[in-house]
Image 1 (cartoon, rainbow, N blue to C red):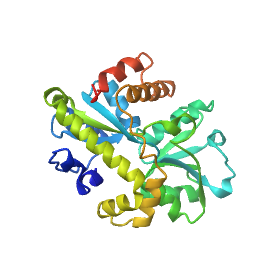
Image 2 (cartoon, rainbow, N blue to C red):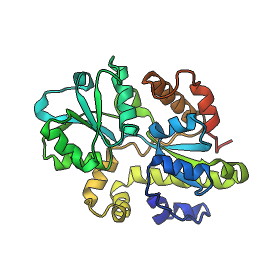
Image 3 (tube, helix red, strand yellow):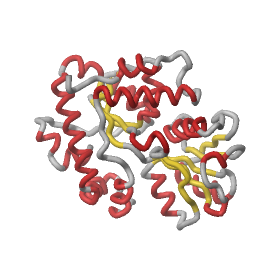
Image 4 (cartoon, helix red, strand yellow):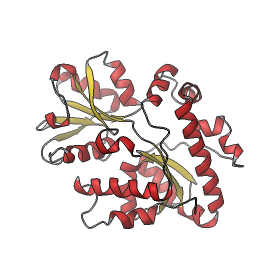
Amino acid sequence: MPVALHRGFFARHNLDVEFLQLAGNIDQMLQALATDKVDAGSSMLLNWLKPLEQGIDVKLTTGLHGGCTRLFVRKESGFQDIKDLKGKTIGVSSISGPPRNFFAILLSDNGLDPQTDVQWREFPADLQLIALQRGEIQAIADSDPNAWLTERRANGDIVEIASNLSDDYANLSCCTLGVRSSLWASDPAAVKSLTYAIREAAHHVAENADDAAEIFAPYTPKVAVADLAAMLRSHTHGHHPSGAELRKEVVKITSDLKRATIIKPNTDPAKLANRVVVDVEA
């Protein structure tokens, strides 16, 4: 979004955009969209699908990129993949957050029950590495930029054994653009323009990671531009599906969340996808 603003993608589509920073969690952003306090916002599908299932009325127009959620263990642990974590404790910053949701899926895919075969413990993001090194947890599940920075702070002590580019998720979106439903109903042309601007900005990030990092640096002043650029290159910012392709991804992720007992067993993934995804190309 900062790239769309500072490199003129919003202006190119005749949009005058104001940023509003929400201090709370992802649910607060969804509530702001659902109550018409903001027009659009972006966040992680893994965290939005549960409240959308529960009736939050927000429309999704495009995926933005894949990647950005990582699972780390200490190098000396000898753990090679997620199956090795059976009976272990995984540290997360939120029990209901996207890292916990995604790795619950991956555990399930690898024959482990995410409710009983591992334990989850909450730690503030800046304390996760300390907890791992003290042995209070045996793995860290977190999202960028903190996950990326944690690995660098560890100075080679930790290794990544899985991410949300693992297995079937290598070609799926992790983040999405949502708009308030009343805006879609009243001004679909504006939603289309906004979606196009954001997708063009995502393409710019994919092609010009150094420039994107320079633009984003003021929003994360404690992070070196070179680190931001390297982090962006590790994501798939060239992947931004919409319409039928986005619906397929929502069906896939919803089905996986059902298997991981996060989405209710009687929820129909196709019906949910049809309700929440709108096609700006139609």
